[in-house]
Length: 315
Image 1 (cartoon, rainbow, N blue to C red):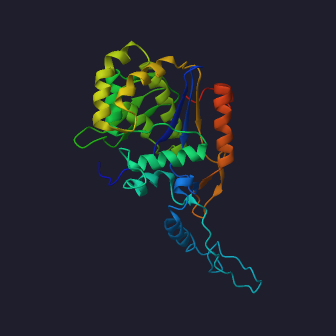
Image 2: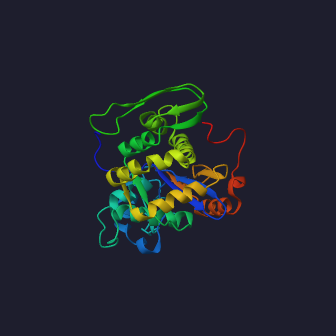
């Protein structure tokens, strides 16, 4: 409410190994810039890239020349660099959908071309095929949590917070909890995963992964069967996905086969997974390190996570 357009601020890749019962959740920062493009989109954003670079070059240094200008001939006068495309998405990763949502010629057989484009971009970044996308509107998220009877999460510090309503005419999402195991309903869950004042995008990403882990753990029980009809209705109302509805029963079975003691959660946050910063201080992904971590987790599971102290999901 009160905002125009759609922003994919939360981007999480979930992967399941049916044979081993292992699963992993990888989350991407919304503010990654210069993300490399897959072959089918390699030259799709060159004009946007030129505009973004031109804007960056207006940031002049103390000599009066933009930071990216270099004195190549030694005459004391910096020259404007020649444009050379990086074949990347030049602005924030969460804007891929915004720029591609109407690309029906590139993605003619999908409910949402923008989500298909985002799926391709993320799959290329992490070097892992992504079979399906699923976008949940905030009101659908709240209703889904309520449909399974809420969720139990371990919370490490007190939260007394309020965030904006998930839809017009609905109360704001408020959370008042103390440290320990807490049972959250839909609105409380929304407040917990959206709050970032006094925190950060990256802390919020961690909470989002942990909530998804808790939901999938508790949904893979008998109450999932009773909630199934409601969830199917919610998918039709509040979810955009290329998952065939006929595949949902199989998806439930897959979730039921997951060993939730073997769910790795990884956030590709800077500085660990960034290769530097843009002139405007946005993180640039360290592509090779990200891809290495994905391979490591898929090969070694939870043991691949670097852990000091308590689990990430006690946050």
